[in-house]
Every structure is written in C-alpha cells, then in structure tokens.
Picture 1: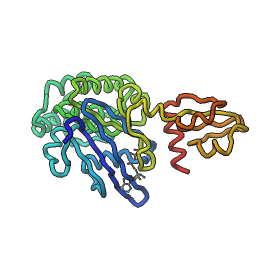
Picture 2: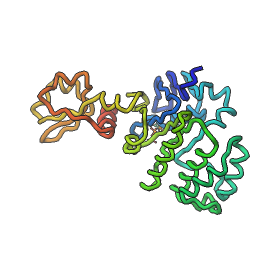
Picture 3: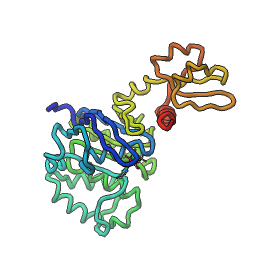
Picture 4: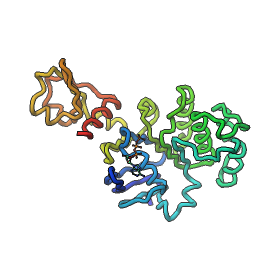
Length: 286
Ligand SMILES: Nc1ncnc2c1ncn2[C@@H]1O[C@H](COP(=O)(O)OP(=O)(O)OP(=O)(O)O)[C@@H](O)[C@H]1O
C-alpha cells in the first residue's frame, strides 16, 4: 500500500436507469484538502456513497487509507469522519445524549475537543436534535466528525445551510484539521469561494465523468475564457469552443489553453471556477 494516499478511486463505475458514473478515477494524498465539484446531478453524492460503501460498486476499485472498505469496514469507520447534507442522528436525543453514544462507538472520541467546537459553533448540549435548525444540525455533524481523531473526512456539501460567519469558522477548522500533515479531507460543494480559499486539489465531475482531477492551478490553467463579437465566431472556433453563450453583441466560452495560440486576435481571459462550471455543464448537456 501507498501510505501517502488516503483515498484512491480507480475506474469506478455505477449505473442507474438514467445515469452512469463512468470510469471515475482520482486520488487524494495525505495532508491535503480536495474539493469535489460539478453541477447538479453530476454524480458527486453517488461517488461519495460508493466511497462509503452505501452503494454497491459495479466495477473498479476504491481504497481508503490504503485498504478496501468492504473488507475493513469496522477499522475504517473509526478512522473516517462523515458529514452529509442531512443529519443522521436520533431526532429525540439531546446533543449530550448524542455525545454519550458517539463516545462509546469511537475508540478515540475526544470530549474536550467536542465541547470546544460546540462552544465555537454556539451549540447548547441540552438541545434536542429535532429542535436544531438545519444549519445547527450541520454544525453538529461537523463537530462530531472533528472529535474522534479521524484521519480522513468525507463531507457532502458541508457548508450548505451555514451562514457566512459559520462557514468561515468551518473553513478555518478544516485548515487546522490538516495542519499536522497527517489528515485529509474530501468535500463536495457548490460554493466555489470555499474552494478558492482552502482546497489544494480538485476533482471536477460532469455528467458522471471526471473532467479534471489535479491541483487547483492546473484547472485554472487548462482553459481560457474566449470572447468576441459575433462576426469573429469562425467555423474553426465553433468546433473548439466549449459551452458557448451568444448574445446579439458577442459570444463567450472556453477554449483549451493548448488551442489558444490559434486565437491571438481575441479576448482571452483567465476563467473563474464558476466560468468553467457554467461552460462545461452547458457543454455536457449538448
Ligand atoms: N438511487 C438512485 N436511483 C436512481 N438514480 C439515482 C439514484 N441516486 C442518484 N441517482 C441519479 O444519479 C445522478 C447523479 O446524482 P448525484 O446525487 O450523485 O448528483 P450530485 O452531483 O450529487 O448532484 P447535486 O449537486 O444536485 O447534489 C442523478 O441523475 C440522480 O437522479
């Protein structure tokens, strides 16, 4: 096993009636944060569910902390923290009761850390789960994920429902979490400013396929945003441009950086992540 890779997917495949996750491969090294991005329905949650063995994989391989999840489920569960966009606690329990149950389940549960994060997030121990707002439930799941000495966090849209101040706090805690170089985080998000702030790597899914996996800068350097007036949209550019948006005054879309030399007389800007997602999602729907 490679001790420096905490999560590895190789040619992972899963089909539903109207959707196919096809040959998804990426790996997340120890000590880094990876953002999993893509438009609605791109396959992010399906990928996370496959990683967590919540869905049966059809083809391919998944390794967590260098081991197969299915064969080492008990051990791996102790070492990963999971957050989903809906809570998985018993509704009628208080936070204190939830804490007691989790401290029994997790060998390395750290009560002190848990209480500290609760305080930071403003969560009272006496509140019942069903009395918490969606944002508070999210915070509670995060507090739990941070409190049992997990090596790998897998978070599905963890910042949805959090106000800007709490989101900021959460991003700071994530950065603290990986600071010792011994832990990693995979998190899916639609909030691209979160990615720009804290992620080292990105895996970008569109329509069940990996469009890009690698470091952040590599994604930004892969495309240019090309703009021009309608008359400049030549047949050659029509073939090269991705996710074109046309108006009466002009057009814009992406071209791969390797093709940019052909378009010297055009406006070529560095795209934002949002530009890339908007264009590639449009391209995927063609
Ligand atoms: N159990 C299922 N049965 C059939 N189709 C499913 C099932 N789960 C997911 N899908 C389909 O798989 C596709 C990918 O869904 P998924 O939830 O993975 O996307 P996503 O990228 O997480 O989207 P979002 O950003 O909206 O959360 C969708 O078309 C969805 O309808």
